[in-house]
Amino acid sequence: MDWAVVSVGLILLYAAICIWLHFRYPEPHWDWENIDLDDLAFPPGFLWGSATAAHQVEGGNHNNWSRWETQVDEDGVPRVPDGVPSGRAVEHWERYPEDIALMRDVLHLTSYRFSVEWSRIEPSPGKFDDAAIAHYRDVIVRLLDAGITPMVTLHHFTNPLWFEDMGGFEKAENIEYFVRFARRVFEEFGAKVPRWCTFNESAPYSVMGYGLGVFPPGVKNFQRMAHVLHHMMQAHVRVYDTIKAMPGGEDVEVGLVKNVFQFDPYRRWSLVDWVMVRVMESAYNESILGFLRDGYFRLVIPTKARLVARHPEAVGKTDFIGLNYYANLVVSPFMRTKPPFDVHLRKGQILTDMPYAIYAEGFYRALKQVSTLGKPIIVTENGIADDRDDRRAIWIRRYLYALSQAMKDGCDVRGYHYWSLLDNFEWAEGYKMRFGLVRVDYDTQERHVWGGTKAYVDIIDRFRSDG
Image (cartoon, rainbow, N blue to C red; front, side):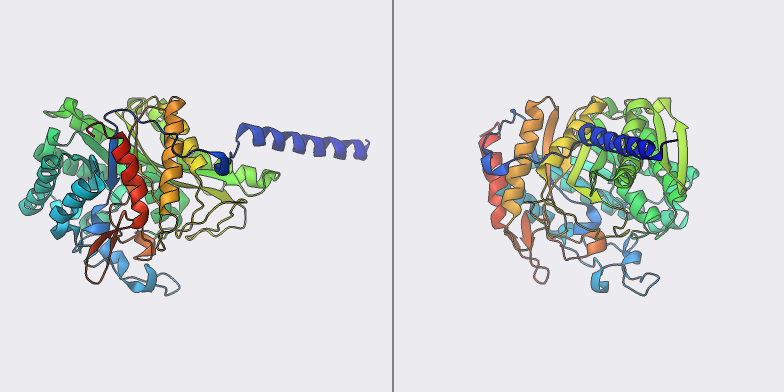
């Protein structure tokens, strides 16, 4: 055997595979210096919104995630930076009339996506709090009176402690408790809310909580993570079917919110990097998209997790797909396995505080990817952490340009919600990340619109169909 010939053949095969992968999974970078960011087009009736999550903004939540905020990890490091809990957050629970007025009069929003806090509504199993229900009813009524369409998320990361202590979504039998909660909430608010999100970001919830262990309950076991994600997908279908069967259910849209990260190889010539990104893409994105599109849940991480199941009842069980998008993740075998992840910036990219790269091209890619479901798309989160307020405007203009381009290229997008309405408590990062359209002084709770927000308001004013 001529080993020289064999070696050359293997090298050529390696190169051929890398070249094929490079063109099969491109990582586009646009020439922003020569792009007209005012070249936009949005249809009449397009939803212009912002979003929050109850625990991050309300304050006074003590029966949920808050227990995690007072703990330390196995190294004695506080679970949140400096051990500062969410506490009073930004007092959105009390200040929602003021915040709705800001949405209407200053930001000119037409849609507001917010979550209802399960632990407030059902503080103990089967015991529902009428005062909490009345609070959220008043939020909905005030939004409608302000000409702002409410969009409710039923689960945005937080569980009541009683549910968490029962094993949460790791146990299939616990799905029924979440279905019961969703049924009660829809009974109370029904068609007053035209759009309902079952789960926010089930992949980050399961990965961070059960894979990497940086969200509650702090588990580091990828097989358990796979079961949690699988059960959440089953719970989505159960809630979808439950709402649709209720009075008013056929008059509303029920959808799932999917966070998309693209996984791109740090070294595009390395098959090791390519194998990593294809495994991560399959587990993080395709496990969920394939479940809704084909009724096939598949999550396989070699040597760590394997769960494959058929669910024909899941096909098409979402009236819209909610897209949360922030950035791509450029990965290598030696990157950190907990946030903040290593940032591999490409030439010319701008870094956010989170830290992510400003990569609006990835937003376009994500819109095209979720469009394969054949369902309308609503952007449910997209925004930048920018304490200096020197990148917020360029983020808004670039990402809305990418959104407009995706729509021109056939993506059926019905609305856009900037994350977030207010600076707030950012889970594992605490109060260090300022994502808001509105700046909040955490000492006085005073609100001031960030200067960069004007870019968003200008675009809204240009395209709002009511002028």
